[in-house]
Length: 128
Image (cartoon, rainbow, N blue to C red; front, side):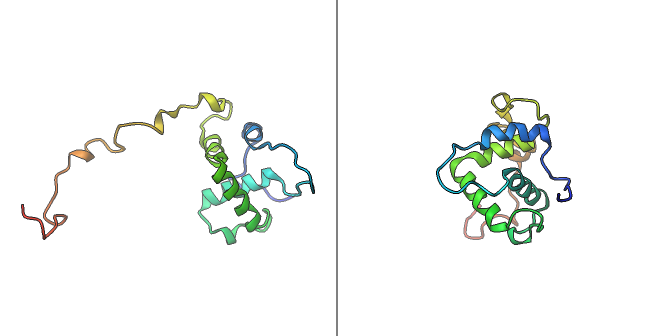
């Protein structure tokens, strides 16, 4: 048993993620990598900002985690994983999340669009 990190996924959030991450069984060798540990490693990296090769050794190998990251990024599941992990309450279903924050027309800082230009930012080639 490895030590827990503060970035580890809670049981409630993992139950939500299981539905996103389930894949149909494929022929061949059964998977030996624990998917929850891969998600924990990704969340650790997102939380700390460490490089791939500096993931702690009690997670799966960095190359394995990176392969899952690429696969999930390419098929769109990585965005769903991030939505579940960043949600305030793990008990809100994925379909009912507030998507207004992603598609808002309001600027992040009110009044920022009304700024004028100053001489330091003006191009010397342009008159005026």
